Length: 510
Image (tube, rainbow, N blue to C red; front, side):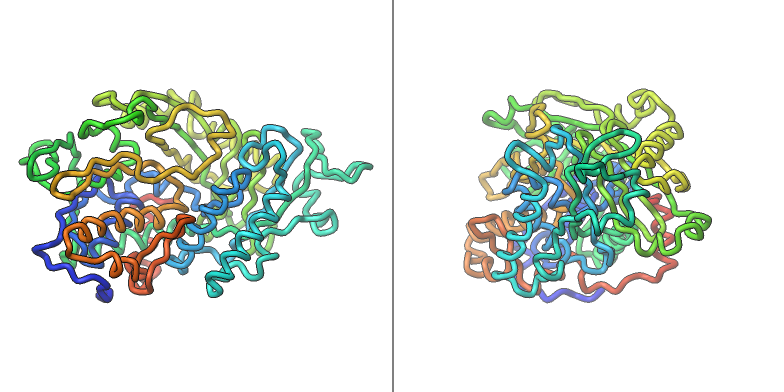
């Protein structure tokens, strides 16, 4: 593996010994940055046998790099836009060339993710254009979406006429769009350029990256290793592993997402203990564009633009692989929600939910797949012809949250590092909350910057040295140097297609 030019020179003797719990996208991203830049001695602990396992939230993701959908909250939209740009800059090879999502917005007062009192989807589109303009004035080479006016385009009747019938829409005498079967009236539509990851290619890249780092002895990976508890002693943090000696680390980063909450950890101080946690079971269907459908609709697989239908419960049809479509639909998407206290010890909700998914859903996977496809085909008729692949299931955990109304739940501007414990030796215990895939590189670099602050405190690095390579401004935008951009494998050659297909099959991504 090509060695990244090291922006910081920290001797092995001075490097922190860091444990990362969880080998999903977040854990691997943090580990890769620390290891490739030789900032720490890194060990990853994963309860399953391999990274990006079938229970991972990372492999059960539609790959949308969100910004517009949370546009009713302007600060959130701006934050996610900047995080999307960073992801696009770091992972240019894994974004679909078709990065256009069509939002159809019905006249429904419950559209809290995009509409709230005094804010319409058209105003959100205008605001997104303004955010992009401001960003280009500061970063003129980040013109990934073309001209600012092209990032969000209001679709008028003339430009939508050609696919009105396929969506089951017609215009009434008042020139409003009405769905023929549901009689729902639409505000209109907006076309948004918003990247979508090819999830198979992204997963193979990250699996390849961690494999190369392990083979080059830049980090250590411990599979089938469940951390039972984290304790504090005079030397640092002590990890208790089943059937193993206790291990000591300067810093522990808990990126275990759902399972990580089941680990007994150092006492947490402050009101955060009273807030509790929310766990949600979300499901969507994975389908394939089979050859017969390709013949019926020439160019479908190549030219399809992902579509999200914003309603009270929104639905979407998203291109996630070259011939693969992900569909989530209304009430079928959010299956269950559990709220539990943050200080509950050994709360085994994560494992229990995975073992009891059929009981939670109340239907078989086949029935769920049909219900999702039937629901979305009311709007996009050809979806009914897609070939079933499997039901994708993800337990999403939001630490430190109370149940919220729909408007509050649409906000995605949380501080990614919610639980902190600073040890007297300068090390930290960091528990990362669940976050959008969009936010993972941003949050990973933010946590790395926090690790660098330990070296600043010890006089190993200066603030000026760190700011040359990674800086955060007052608007929470992270700027990283070209050397830092390669920490997530931007320079790695893509594996041969047969090798990528082998990984996709072995890891059961599709």
